[in-house]
Every structure is written in structure tokens, then in C-alpha cells.
Image 1 (cartoon, rainbow, N blue to C red):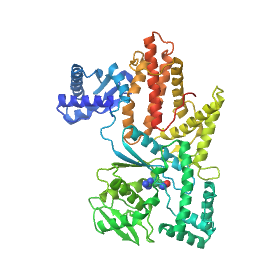
Image 2: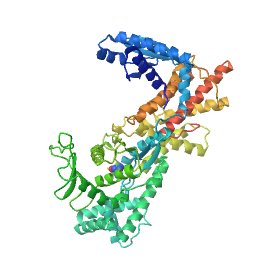
Image 3: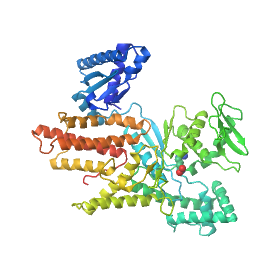
Image 4: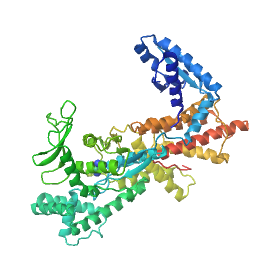
Length: 594
Ligand code: ARG
């Protein structure tokens, strides 16, 4: 992806080569904290000074000279001015100020099609609720984060395959099938899902007190896993019903997942014996760095470092097994994930696989990735676990309802939309009922998504309708309002296409806004590097703030002469476009009026 920062980095690297004879030096470029010091700063001189045993300021001077020479050469070659100023400050910081032409080009780069060096096939494993239960807030983060990841990857030109690895094969189905089949109806067609959930609770309670029912439930799991037609038929109905419910929530949430993206745990069931057999055969006891051995009847993978020390240890310090078959013959979450990862890399030829689950599964994924790598299934494949923290209630404990149950996602979304609708109506404006509905949806759902994405991903966060629906601060309503406000300016101007109009840079507020726009692409690259989605939120929040300042300082609709008016309107249009684009990448819909 083309960015101004990358161009600057390249020039600095060249300058290092020329003035210091250094190959492939790193520019260590950052955005300056104080705009008095220019737009970007290069922090490389201090490190180089140590390495080359020279004075950092002298190094900075050599680099400065070379940078200015390179800039002159660019101009001679007709490549367009990039650096307007290059100054040395402090112990050896090199401060760089961009030219107006460069700033404007930076904005044009946003729409440039040359986004990628190498499109990759990426599988994104996200949402993945355990079905037969209602979706709850714990699945919210995976769904929202994973969806934003898919949108970003798609925007960057990658080939994205969404994969909803739903839990459709666990022991809960034994209970449910046993309960339903005991009652002889053999059909769940008449019960809606809340019934199904009640059934699950009842069957769980019964299992607690009735040893014989427990037995029947266990037998049902075995029957299911062995493909008994009657049990499978009941199971299929439960799964379909649950998926109907889950996909209603997805529709409400406005995420990309479709029914075709479901490849549940059950899909891998037929593959599991072979996966275990293969591993067992190829990695016998004593093999290093990985061995597959039976331990108290269970089939376990043990992994070792080059010194022969176990890579994963129990709290007591013993080797920690990655268990792939229990002593009763049952397969586990780990087995399914191994089969699944093998399919994704070997059959589907993914080059990059991303898993979005809560941080408590981090160890599972480290063991999965390491064992799959040792098995030779992941050569050249990038594997990423993208963990996240928990959603907490106002009491700082995992979010629950008053009665202590998991909060249902459907209820939560409905509540957000209801509150957003109240906020809109209070304004008492001339909105049609339809418009109010669209605004309430966009604001309510947008608020939930944005509150999640704007956090540091790894932190737990407190779920607060009040905070996420606030019109001020780093919230979706604030950003959506900024967008709607710009759209209303453009409607008043009666124009929104400004092709060929140069963005204005005379007023400092204009320059700040253009510079922020020009940083869009590099922000995306930072976001993708480690999936720091909050950086995109921060970017958009800052962009909106800079727009508000610009609009306070600079007359737009009544600006004179016409040329200035057009330039400022063009800046409004460009800001709106980037806001919509950025929010869209986060999965947040904008509205034209608010
Ligand atoms: N169903 C699992 C859960 O709710 C998440 C699955 C994540 N994906 C995977 N391939 N393990 O915890």
C-alpha cells in the first residue's frame, strides 16, 4: 500500500546508504508530537551514533544533507516535491515537513488501486458460537473484531474466506437429543429457540440428579458421533434452528457472515481418527521435537525445544500434553482444530489463517500452531491468534443479567437501538419514521461495535450504554454526527463532486485536516500490523475533531472568492469520504442526516 511515510522512509534509507555507507538502514520514522517540529521525525541518528561510534548530531547532519540532495534529485527527475523542510533538533532528531504537493498526493493515494504487493488467501475464523444455546455477549467481540478484520483484508485486496467454526458437536447435544427423544416426539420443529435453551437447562438439571438420564445422554453422544440416523436427524433440527437464530442476530448486527461460511466442528468429525493415526505414526514416542504418546489411556502430543526441554509445562513444571483423544476414545477441541488447520493449509491452501477468540484460549492456539508446524502442515503460512479481553458489567465483573445469567446478544442489540431511537426523537426534528428507524439502527449498532473496537483489544472493557451512546467523545454517535453534518453542508452547497479541485492548505486548520487525511493509508498499515483496530478509531476521532476545528475557523458555504469556497467544499467532501470509508471498514454504517 502506498503511503507518504513509506516514501520518506525510503529516502532516509537511501540517505544512510549515501552518507554513511549503510545498507538497508531503518528510518525509525514517527509522527511528530508537536507540529512545530514538522510532520514526521526520523529517530535513527542516535542508534546509529552508538553503532558507528560517532556524534549523533554529526550523523544527523550528514543525513540531512543527503536527504536534501535526494529531494533535489527527485525534483530534477520530475518526481514531485516531497520534503519542504528538513531540520535537526535536540540530540539528533531529524524533523521533516511535507510539501503541499506531497500532502495532496497523500490524499490521492487513498483512492489509488495499487494497494497490495502480494494478495494472499486468508481464512478468518471468527464468531464461532456454541450452538443450541442463544448467542451471548461473549460472542460479540469475536464477531465484531473478526468482521472488521475481514473488511480490512478485503479492502487491502486479499482473498478473504470467512469461516464460522461453530460448536455444533459437543456434549450439549447428547443432553438435548436424549431429552427430546425421551419425550418421543423426535421433533423440535414446534419449539422456538428460547424453548430449546430452556430444554437445555432442564436437561442439564435432570442430568445432575438422574444417573440414568446421564447415561442416556452419554449414549446419545456416542450414537451421534457414530452416525445413528435417528439421533442425527434430531441433531440436524437443533442445529438448523440454532443457526436460524444466530443468523438473525448477524443480520441485526450487519456483519458479513453468511450461512455458506459455516463449517462447524461436526464437519471435521469424520477426519479425526485419521488425523490422530497419522500423527501417532509419524511422531512415535521419543521422537523430537514432537512425540505422540499414550498417557493413562489418553493420546497426547508433547512438544520440545532444541535442548529437549518441554515447550509447554504444567504449573508443576511437568510437560503439558496437547490431548487429542481421551481414554474413552472421544476426540477433543484440539483434535478438531488440528484437522481443521490441516484442511485449511493443505486442502484450501490458505497462506494466512486468523483466529479471533477471547484471550483465555491463547495457550490452546499456541499449542495448536506449534504442533501443526512441527507436523509440517504450516510451512510458509502465517498463523495468527487475535485474542481479546472480556466484556464486563458496571460492577467490573463479566457482564450478566440481574438474575446472573448470560446477557443475550439479541436483547442487547434491541436495547441499544431503542436507546438510540429515544436520543434521535428527543431532538424533535423533521425526520420521517423510516429515517428515525435507519438512524436508530445505525447509531445503536454502530455504538456497540465502536465501543468494542475503540478499546485496546486485549483489555477487558465495561459495557455502558451511556458511554457508547454519548454524543461527545470517542463514540460512534459523535463520528456519525460529524459525518452527517458534513453531508448536510454538501447538500446545502448542492455539489459533492470536486474532481480536479486542489485541497486548500493556507489556513493551519486546513493543513492539519489535509495532513490527517493523507495519513489514512499508513494508519491502515499500522492497524493491520497486530490488528490494532483502535488505531483506526483514534484516527477517525481525530479526523472528526480536526474537521470540527476547520469548520469553526474557516468559512465554507459563504467563503469568498469562489475558488476558496470550492477548495473548502472539496475538503469537506474528502473528509466525508474518508470517514465513511473508515467507519465502513469497522463495519459501521453511516447515515446522511442525524
Ligand atoms: N466455539 C469456540 C468457543 O465458543 C470458539 C471456536 C474458535 N475457533 C476455533 N477454530 N477453535 O469457545
